Length: 573
Image (cartoon, rainbow, N blue to C red; front, side, top):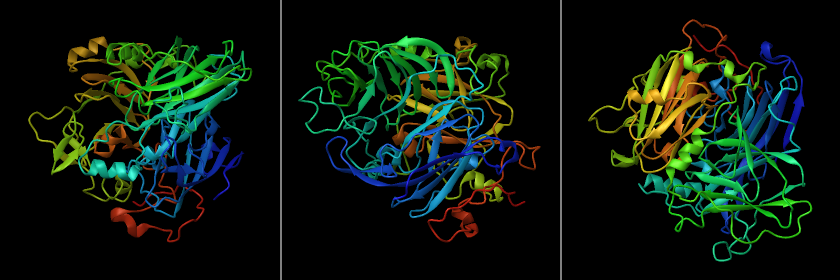
């Protein structure tokens, strides 16, 4: 087992523009760990023997170098949810840009968190592996010269919430491959642990639970990430208000919540003041939303908030969730209340609101419709606009760099085709560099979905029930729609986002629900600067690039477990 390494140094960078920016180095051994978070022994994915994995704590513009040893028995990629990888999709860690790291091999990620702040997380992106763990947090702090729109907290706490199955991820894959639904999860984990025994009939004895230690009178920044498979969760802390201050790299208008729905793949940070009398510990709860409460009662995560002067254990009923589990209007109105803080700076000193998205003309618009899974060629698949994406053996961006033709097509439909049967596809979206794109996610399924875009933060400008029409644009938020990378889409509803295509690369747009993603509900957006023949707007292929598919003959390193230094060199002409 490697020793975890997190070292920060100021060195001469590979890229001259970054020479003054610090580097943070990490060594990760990603392998299986036996654990029983819900009382059943199973195989989970840990990093350096820990589940969840370590927090990557860095600051704006730092360079991050993560050397990953794949100790799993199958290929691995790590993706960085919300990290934009400016000019550098080579580090994105999805199958459209990277060949997976073979079992027993290591590979080094190197990227800069350029002009970003906020709360993010990483996870393994292939083969449903996130359902087994392998995730951890990314905290990007402001530079000292940039003011923050709230006082310095007394502490920083990361909380991972997510639904969990007692089956290994390989068994879950087999279920999907055999046309089955994953069904109701076995529970909800908080920081990789099962629920506190708040109810003897629902929680068996002997379950290890998470305890969050705090001091009275202090204020903590609590970062919450839904890293689960497919379940939206309502998060709350008994007796405490949650002051929302940031989501996925954007400072928000500050407002208090007693609870907040956190959908799959989403991240929020709150300021929470420890202002209670500590007569006992307090429940921290993450419970399933948009489900039958009587059937899903066990799908509830419970941790304990423990004051240093606490006088007893938590007991009694859990704090109430929203009154009606099926009151989707409440949840949507809550989502609409999350607004951009126009006056605060983020990674730069100028206010976030100085970017007036409503004054920019839309140059491309795509309506992406999802439905319940369908059968294609005898297999159960998920689709966008009737197309179910099937990753080619050769990553899209790598194929472009080497002039390999026929790997994909640039003909993804702007609207769902009328009357066309669903089919397998490798069709992607041809984005216009420096264009302004509108994406409308139309969820015609009966389940909650959330959608994520790599490489960017988009502006969430509208959502409503029913079918989106051209007239729906009249309801858009034209001033303070929050910029983030993951948006929830309610069943029978739509959500609209706007994105400025200023980041060259090939970028994944996907369902964050792992079952839908695994079954093909994703697409890529290709953004090319036709005037750049060097590396001004996109970095060259890194020297340590892995090769697979039609390009496997270019693989330079024949031996596993090598510690490769990363350099970016010109791609072949």
